[in-house]
Length: 75
Picture 1 (tube, helix red, strand yellow):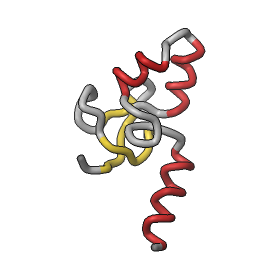
Picture 2 (cartoon, rainbow, N blue to C red; picture 1 turned 120 degrees about the horizontal axis):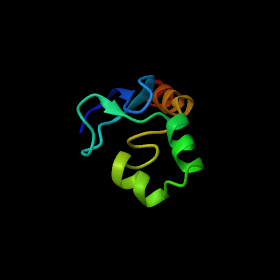
Picture 3 (cartoon, helix red, strand yellow; picture 1 turned 45 degrees about the vertical axis):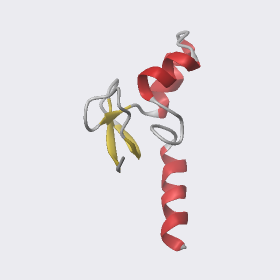
């Protein structure tokens, strides 16, 4: 599946450039800040995996995504 810029389905902010998770509407994912917020409210890792996908594939820190992208383009 293609990697694309995603919008956070919770807050509407940019979520970073990630692979679309099958359980989200096209163009939407989740930002790391909203994952942190959900975890602080008791959402389990299993629920996050089911709802939003895998960290570093479907969502993550934008800094990590940019560093990964920079590394791939420099090779």
